[in-house]
Length: 104
Image (cartoon, rainbow, N blue to C red; front, side):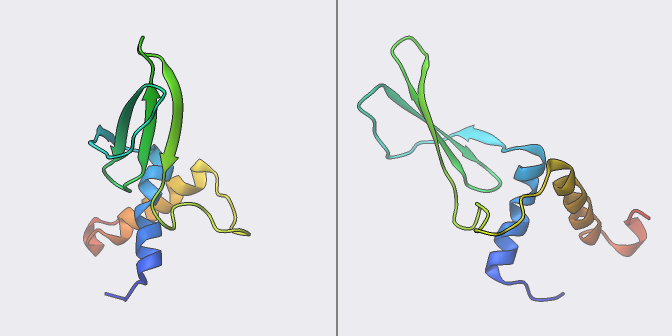
């Protein structure tokens, strides 16, 4: 097994979210708002928080995302298409399988 830097390991974990989307669950958070009711969802894979403000009639007032460190691309880093992330995910899944179970 080769050594991976923490940065690369974290970024590798974000591939699933960038490929198939976040896996949200409701989450208790400490942020507050003066415009309505706070509703926080958190991704179980990458830790991104979606912070919604809900109005008195259930309408969405605002939405903000609080992303983990290194989730966003750095300046100059190429933005990949979702199809590219699918190929990366397939490659990562293939690496995690024993040799006899790998796709050709």
